[in-house]
Image 1 (cartoon, helix red, strand yellow):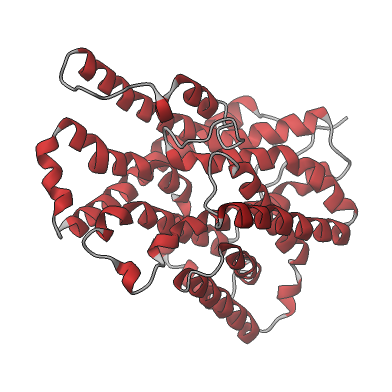
Image 2 (image 1 turned 45 degrees about the vertical axis):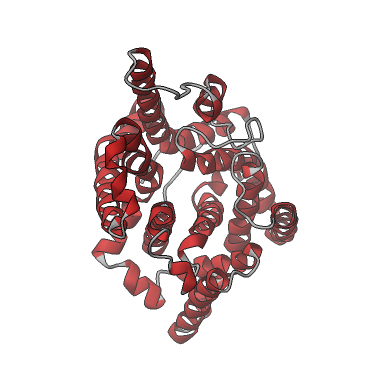
Length: 376
């Protein structure tokens, strides 16, 4: 029997770039709290404070991309072989950067442990609480958003990678159904997304669920992306004006939900419209997304998302622990300047991660351990 092949199709530049914009939105959300103490932009608009919702865009985009790229390898059903191969390919994509960033935070904890042991620091618990060995094990196994722990720890943004990993485990079975009956699959995914995300909205009052039930949030967004894929193709019949109109509605809707603090779940359909209207690489968003700086953000988006917490931890928390006399930086209206420096450092670190970890590891592991898979 011939080996199944996975062919990476032509890149959708608009979606790559939008992923970068969303990553930048999450980074700004993480940089905002110290700034808010002196420059409270929430008085004008809470858009920055709603940046966590861009993670739901990631989940929806992931569901769309998984269908776009991988559904055909399950055209004849799920076998042990194609299931394991699919999961291995996805792990190659997400795990190296996850593990590298996790080890950085383990290094931080080791430094604190040594400092406490030698009396340089006092009153600080190490390898406990959110940095416990159990939490570390859950992070290594990528199960820390599956309800096994209820606190954020180590590299906090990685909870969403754990949630996405859960969706990967389910996807092959959904792909079989998608290949056989797209309409039925679409109805199921619509209902699943509504039920899962409504449960979180009602129980938590928002969609900012992470470690405890993060996998439910991820699966709800993933199903949303699969719905978008089921609808994809129809947008090719639309005029350029209609595409522009849809894209404008989507962006305006996203900003309006954030600005007016409408129930978080309302933003999900606008994310779906944005992905659908941008999937043909047309319209004004298509033009913006082809700009080099915007596309650059898309290329480094995964590293940008995964490494930003390193910079914010070092500059916002760790250095104050070791050098408390420098805490005055956070007690000044000039804290916005520090946020600007942090943003520049985050982008530089993300680029380094992409160049030296993310891209080389993906290429090496594909060639070394997945020789039968064909990548265009």
